[in-house]
Length: 147
Image 1 (tube, rainbow, N blue to C red):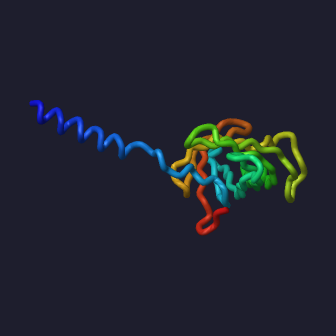
Image 2 (cartoon, rainbow, N blue to C red; image 1 turned 60 degrees about the vertical axis):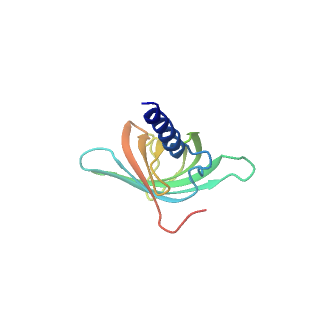
Image 3 (cartoon, rainbow, N blue to C red; image 1 turned 180 degrees about the vertical axis):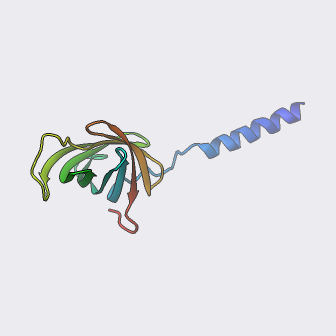
């Protein structure tokens, strides 16, 4: 019985060490991304984003995104600036401001696109688009493009 307990404790210690990430690399947010959100039947919401680190501020990021929303007769393409702030080891908060409407008149009906994302891998983030309502979203890194 004592031998079993020693083996169990040794195995637990060894396996427990595998689960720690003392030397794990933090998630890499910088780079080019494509995104989509599911905003309703018959509607489309897609876009591209570029996230860049702020050299003077450790852990801070700035970004630009262009979102395209088409829903029936409504069709907007909107360029936005944003900040991207890690909120925990695997979360990223993106807060946007509208810069301009491309190919359409500006409207008060379109709100800035803000995101709360969970890091799935260095290639994929998922979470919520917070705009007029809250919608499921997915971000995929452009292959071969990182900062």
